[in-house]
Amino acid sequence: MSSFAPVGLPRLLPCVILASLPFVAEAHHPLSAKFDTNTSNTLQGQVSAVDWSNPHVHVFVNVENPDGSLTNWALELPSRVELEWSGWRPEALQAGQRITATGWPALNGTHQLWAESLSDSTGKAVFTVTDDPFSKRLAERSEGPTPRWPDGKPRLGPAPGQSGFWGLPSRRSLIEDGQNVVMDEHGLLANLDDAAKVAPFQDWALALYRFRQSNHLRDDPMFLYCVPPAGPRQFQQPFGAQFIEDKDHQRIFLLLGGGNGNWRLIYTDGREQVGQVSGNDDNPLFFGRATAHWEGDTLVVENTGFNEGFWFSNGGLPHTKLLKMTERFTRLDQNTLQYAVTVDDPGAYTRSWTSTWELQWFPGEELPEYYCQDNRP
Amino acid sequence: MKRLCTALLLFFAWVAPAFAQQGHPLTGTWQGDWGPNANTRHFLTLIMEWDGKRITGIANPGPDSTEIDQLTLNAADWSVAIDMDLKDSEGKTVRFRGTGKLNELGSQNRVIEGTWNADGQSGTFTLTRQSGA
Image (cartoon, rainbow over all chains, first blue to last red; front, side):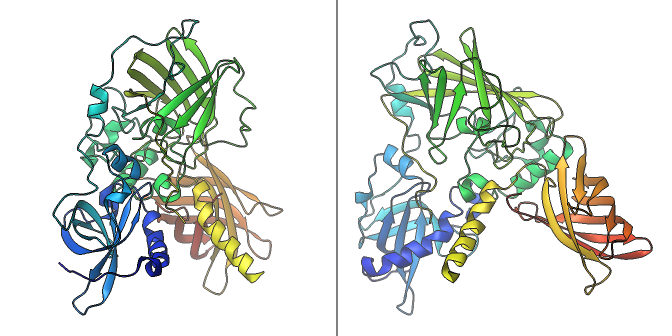
């Protein structure tokens, strides 16, 4: 444990910004990819800056060394959105305040710590995420049937004069329906031996999936380079999605609360799967090309034309450009959206397979502002 | 101008991986060389494609282009076997049979390193996957 003296923030800020660059480039991994979760360290020091950003808030702290010199540590915390949902604002911690932090040190030996707990000089906890920032808001919702348009079709977005979005997915990684496999919110398997149960992989795809899993998903291009969470992954993110149904133009805008403010278009005007959104077979897209039709109360979206530049699911399941994806959206009632995706990718899987989960309606709120690039160079 | 070039190089070094391929590990453009020793090397470009059942591709696109006859990946140990005709620096066609190992699997710039033999000769080869390709 160390302690130290204050350092002028203006003098330090350029160093702080420079020092933070390597951290954000690896941000938002499974924690075990970046931090030694088997070791707990405690630091005491004086706050030099608070970077109130996504994907992670950072608190920079000057820690005094035994010889009197200072070392600036970067304490990494959950995202700004998560802290704000738990009621925190950046003003809760000011430069110059003394704090104590306990958490996991960086695996690479740099002066970074994942702060499991942070407390001020009075011992009061600051910047802690409540165990479940969603439960209170979900409990306050009113129940009701599926809202509908005048033509009888279910509304996938909010009714006029209202707001809301879909979030809190019940499944955070693709896994074939009917399989019982335990994984965390990043899609990291509790038991690597369960890998083959997740999906009907081809040999190379299973081997690559196992490699990514055993590597704690640290090569994930979404976290390394802010590549979009496209494919089914857009409905596995903690910050939700929103439908804007543009009936006049017979298309649906789908806005994402995670990633880097991505959006995609779903055409409902009966067009063919060609020549749209500038994508074609020679120009595959992150979000592919999507056309849709209604089957009863279910919106069926056919997707093709994906590039291979992204991971299409949390957990690192591979896909190829041969991927065709059928999504089925069914608003079961006012508060529940069922999402079922059938993956047909003969490049990576031995047969087509389906994964189904639900999302919850958060009424009265717009999508949170979350940009992967917030604290990137 | 030097500053501009440096800035552009840094920009593309950062941006290129964002568009890198995450599908089948061999798909893409690979560049490197082969030869009997460190002093005699022949430039080699392979463009590989995975169709869901087999890997196809061409070597050295251009006037000396040849098709890869057989290319296999064993995912159990990430070993690679390549069988194809190649033209050496003198334009002579040689039968190239190489075996290697795919390394740095999580990197956009994955590497295949191995050995080859052709027409009684042997040596090493190295191929590096090109970012953004």
